[in-house]
Length: 317
Ligand code: F6P
Image 1 (cartoon, rainbow, N blue to C red):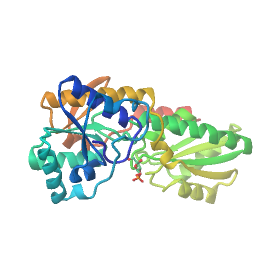
Image 2 (image 1 turned 180 degrees about the vertical axis):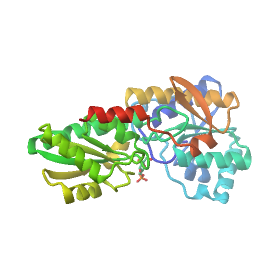
Image 3 (image 1 turned 120 degrees about the horizontal axis):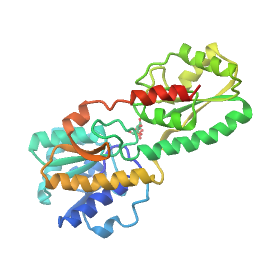
Image 4 (image 1 turned 90 degrees about the vertical axis):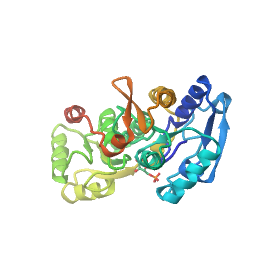
């Protein structure tokens, strides 16, 4: 099952689960539309061929939803009944924090074996170095910023580009670093408007004629429009423009890194269930597959690497 916001590589993860299940002589079913589909019994039997030609496709062939009904006890009771009626022994959920919270509660209430596969562009899950979809989303942002830079340079403009990530700054940090942003506004590391203006003035002294500021959507100063307005109140050397990248960051062909990660985690999830590692999330830490209790994965925060943050400042001078 895929649930929550879709992410590039979810299909590769579905393929990994299905192929690994078949390899281990298990029957495997796909649940459509996340927990909503589970509650309604929108479930089909799958086989090796059901996942042919999906490896390189964005989105999720099983569709996804942010289910309100599954947050209720009644919703979870109905979902459990569907699973038991089909004699399903375990559930693999591919998604993010909300998805795993639901899976963890289901397990706590009923003992039903669940295992999570981290699929979200936000990279905000504790228990894995990277989540499926993050690498592709960062590459999408870089491609867009490279294009925006052509206009910034041609017109001597200052651009504020807002990227996704909810309350995490992973996309902003990595995309900002990889696209040569002059400043990166992150929810985790406070940067006041005054500080940002100081950075911009300094860059002027080194004859910079255009700049890109990456603003994480969860930044404390507000979105990119707010930051641009506040900067303009005290700094108007450059004409400014704002671009909010939005959902283009969630779509597209998954990168090689995401496909490999998704394949590994899909296989790992099935193997984890066979080894009775229920109520955990399969992740990759330091290149090794690791199973983290769902409780920890949903309550602990994935921290930005402080050294990467420090170095991004050096690179942007
Ligand atoms: O969690 C993925 C994400 O794309 C976040 O980065 C963003 O804040 C949110 O989902 C947007 O959600 P929706 O697609 O429901 O508007």
